Amino acid sequence: MFAKCKVGNICYYVKDIVKTEKFYRDTLGLPVDNMGDDGQGNDFLIAHTAGSIDLLFFQMEGTAGSSPIIVFEMADGGIDSAVDGLAKAGATIVTPVSHAPGGWSAEFADPDGHVLSMYQDESVPR
Image (cartoon, one colour):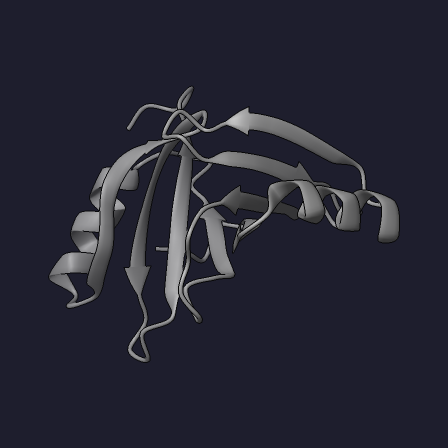
């Protein structure tokens, strides 16, 4: 199911988006886009890497071990059927398909409880 999906993003939950932006932009020298509010009251930013895997930072409370989260891009769509297939296979669905900036996402856990995510752009049919 995920063999054709590439890792598109790695998401982190951070306490201070301003300090995070300064560190990744000024200290590490990465191009950073501050995206403002994600529509759910959380500020977020994107740090771009040369390898085409963006680092996403959401200012929100998180517990130890809740981030980073690896995000698989569902370029061909099918996020709903992918989540259904995972559930039928016994995977723990942490967050069902829900709105995310510019599309939809869902989170699930591996057998050790590590959270993984999938994201589908809103331009691709669900």
